[in-house]
Amino acid sequence: MEQPTTENPNRSLTQDQIDTFRRDGFVVIGKLLDDSLLGELRTEYDRLFDEARADDRYRNLAADGGAAQRHDEGAEEEMLQIMQCCERSLAFRRLLYNDSILDIAEDLIGPRIQLFHDQALFKPAHHGGPIHWHQDNGYWKCLPANLVSCWLTLDDVDVTNGAMHLSLGSHLAAHGHERGDVLLDASEALTDVEPVVVDLAAGGAMFHHCQALHSTPPNRTDRQRRAFAIHFMTPGTRNVHGDMPVSFSRPLLRSR
Figure 1 (cartoon, rainbow, N blue to C red):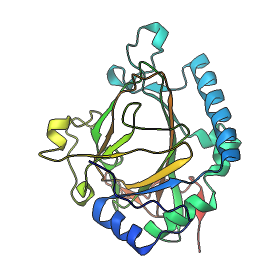
Figure 2: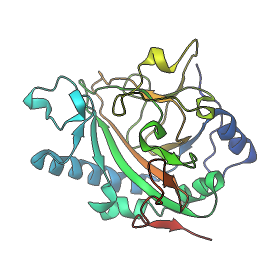
Figure 3: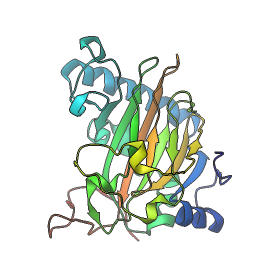
Figure 4: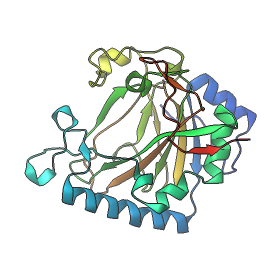
């Protein structure tokens, strides 16, 4: 299914784009990062993964249980994750405060924006592993369930090398993730639904709701797929298991 034609290079969203997000659970922004910033982030991204491989400070989400496992140690597929790049790189720390990103987040969740967390999600060429259908808040279990994610691409991304697939309107209902750390099987997540595939040029972005069902296919091409996600919440967001707000040690990115 073709993705909705909602691209807009401007910082703030149009009312049509906001309505699209409310209806579908996501909105495609298109090119958001300029080439100079994109080049800096690519260099830092590669450095972070080189360092992480040296001391196993990453997870391979394609390995059993998401355990850290290097490809040359036997993993047939790699879907590599580094959490909190903002604590390892000044370039990614600065990205959290990027006005182009925060202006869009503000249109979606309001002017008080706090970081939930960030993560780099890397599918290497040839053996990049999939991420199966899931809702982010199935694991986060945050209340209110109104967190928003900015998904950024540092490479050209299409259906062949790991583009985002989403289910229209799926954010309107929570799906149980029965075993906690196990992703939904596609047959559980979707019934007679044709997913939307979001192709993005390098430096492109899309924003999605924390309950939007999404997945990414494996990467069998000779092109790598470097993606980065920033997850935003409103201050006072709580975890369903406790009475305390999600930690206020996480930076407040905007308040006005």
